[in-house]
Amino acid sequence: MSESGSKRVAAGVCGILLGSLGVHKFILGYTKEGVIMLLITVLTCGIGSAATGLIGLIEGIMYLVKSDAEFEETYVRNKKGWF
Image: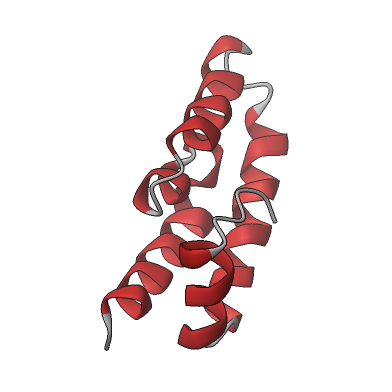
């Protein structure tokens, strides 16, 4: 498995399991987006975690269903931060 394939799986699983904390964003190097998701969850005392968790779930599934080449092109080269 290539490095981007490893990142794809790690980011996908973390997006599904820890999406409300933005861990999948940090794995991909999207610090700004990760901090935004983390702050929404923390500053709303967990109330915003429903929205950020749903975003994480959707993004995690999207990461896992893409091929390594598609993932590399979209999220590593083009740096698509959201969906």
